[in-house]
Length: 334
Image (cartoon, rainbow, N blue to C red; front, side, top):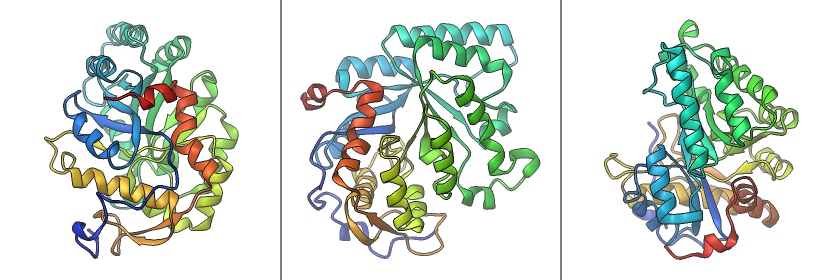
């Protein structure tokens, strides 16, 4: 594991440089356990880094409670098919349960369904996103006017080190047809694909996906992975974000839960927000405060110095357009 060259107290995590962007920010990809633990996230996200709204990944009961407490400041992404807790063997029962779940989700005013079709999911269930047994599920999502937030594939470094069994996991390119087939079959569904479609290593692939599929948007979550790989592209990463400024959402992938070893610590939240702010708004090469098990050298990242209009769309306008965030809600007090 590559460790930072400086200790955390050497970074201005709780007194970052003034932001170039001063408007409201949506964290369009984070996780929360309940309405109490998310308060620790707001303590850093809002008070220090200006995040006013978020898309928390939660179950339906928690989503309803979060909406009751925070109103339009949150637009939960509710688990639609949970990676662990499903009975795929009972086809009719599974269908009845999922149809009722999607109906309840929409009736409660939710707009986003969270899915997780990674190599690990394939390993556990031998099921891909485009399996015909799931046609009813996506048909209903489209009919209800819901969006999807989905994780497909995984980092290149993981395929090189952890997912090398081709029979068990498949090669990385084998994980994208399942997404493409759903994008093509369901043009009425907006698919927010996490972690730059799990392929920040390959800008040309991302460009092709966006050009061919107008119902696809990407998010910037998984901070250490994104900062490592986008930095390797240099100016090409900046050019990519400018070209596709209407199709990328800001997200961190932070987990608001004090029961986790790191995620409950204010310093952990701050490291992620600090790297994001410097990467998108500053110029130069910076030491990173984040330990990175996939890095071969002490972690560093490049500031991309995005234009003001791109930052406006990236941080706020794209998520507001897709999920209904409003300036009035973002200015409301907690």
